[in-house]
Length: 209
Length: 281
Picture 1 (tube, chains in turn cyan, red):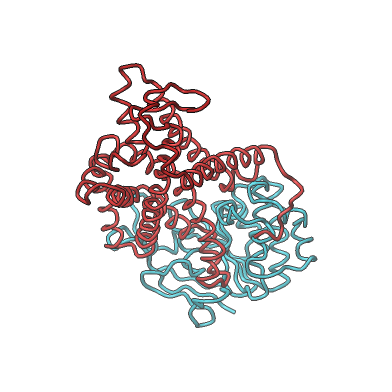
Picture 2: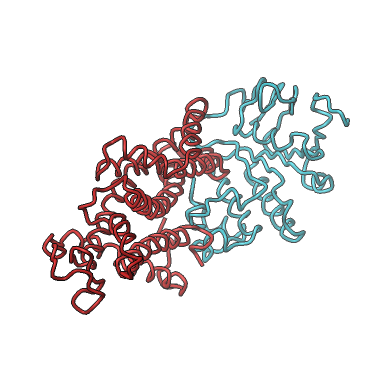
């Protein structure tokens, strides 16, 4: 399968400056594309557009030549930078994990998720533990592409390594395509099969470029 | 939601909060029901008993017409609560409708609602209350409507804010992407987020309404003089307090104060219990 973004332009309001201009890229299944660039260059915006959270002002996002589905489980899933913001603080972890599907025990074991955490509230888990839940809940069988928006930036080195290890393993096994957004170039070079510098792709003229 | 709830861990803070809230609720509901049951005989005019100080027979003493102040206070407070319940019910419905409309539709709807809120908040509350009550011919009807149409702005703002916040939150957007329908998201994420805010808002509106009702009545623009309302009682007490009849003002005043504090207590308790960060401690 192929996820493509063609000539994507984006700005928040009709008169605000362009954030993305004529950005085109495509990701194949099994490919891990790293997107690097300084902050404020539209990395996260690109992630939100490719996963269908935001509509581009012009240009299109296609999955195998078709639009992303508006309803139902989206085959392109975004994992957020801040896991504590992407879970409902009023739900217990078990409910959060089972939002879309029920992962089997084997996956949970490999993800390092313990069953006893299910009865806890999100505030009672650490960032790394929460992020595992956030990853596991979007690994439903229908998922084809994963878009990781700085998913390990706030974690310590050991947890980072753990999370990447299990995420890469899972993606390899299922032949998922990944887009990995990071400002950490060495991380991108280690985990990705291909690295894109967003400023080179983006045709926005910036005063400081 | 309760599938993973363990009942075994009951924590002290939670229990203490619950107990205070229950005591407060019992006091308020008790006064309300008792007040409804009291007949006019209990505080009938009796010139033989003029200005009796507090005693075992008349706990709060009697006034210039020999009426028992204890029963008058209870009856008055209960009447205030009835007015409070009706006006809060109307206010909160206005607030929830306006708040959700302005958050969901945005654009000019949002602008109009915000203007209305600003307009209502910009005027001194008491002046607006007196004006509306006076226009509607005072009495129970006037004061209830006046309180009902002046207490929605702050709650509208609160609900609008909460709806906006939860709609734009990452977990709600992620839920849509994970294939949840609008209804499922509303039931699982949005309503559980708005409902506590609504209940807290309602309980915190009560003391406001009651205080304002008493204030307007005290100033002579609310309930008629022959009704046993706290505002009326306090206004009458003013004329006798210089002659040393302290019980006329002190006891009804304290009763009102306790009721208001208890409502606040319940509101704050609910806030702490329903907030996910403090509620799980």
